[in-house]
Image (cartoon, rainbow, N blue to C red; front, side, top):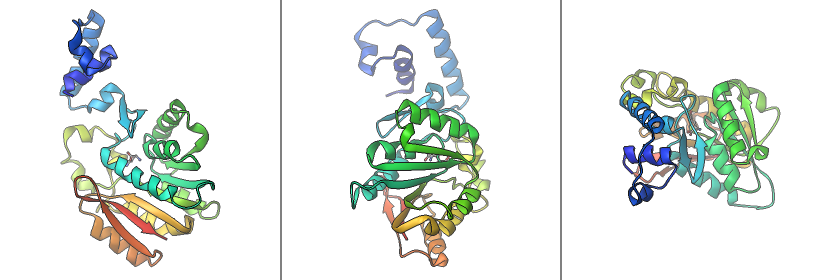
Length: 264
Ligand code: GLN
């Protein structure tokens, strides 16, 4: 759908075909909203922020400048998580930890698709946790997800004495700091802390990989989304830790190695 069509279907709350089926005219008020939306677009604001919503695995989620916009690649990560969680004994509760939850997309899609799952989410941003909680509530999944607002580094340190998980999953910030300036204008409107992976982009992977084995059940898995050129570095970090049996990669639909499966 063209961008203008998306704005109009949003304004009229109708389907694309309905735009052409009958004669629709914008009221003065709608016209004002429409021009405001177009001016936000021309200033490089992402369409999803303007519409205030995004579809993630068939689930409607509210999004705004407080959180990263969920991407289709992450849907592939979640499909992989669902496959892993559905293996084995179907009646036991499957405990999942989602690090850096943002809009709550990963947690919500898992909670919705894996009936016997319970997801713990962590995010350093109170604003993201607010939005993720709202999204869980709107999708009636709030009783299957717990939200923790904390720096994941501190959380990981404390959690090793408390709980174990069948799956730890994350799509952490992974852009090297110096590259953020060169990102397209609309991406730069997303929260800096949701993009910035530190000097080499790998800070969060180091944190997560160094702690996850202590949080995983014996046959648990760590599932990470990674940047296009990070597979080799991730493999090295995993091997250097000496704590995992296996580290493999899956290609996304675009043929890029974007999913890492690490077995405890
Ligand atoms: N988990 C969220 C997502 O996958 C947020 C990720 C982030 O903020 N880096 O979209």
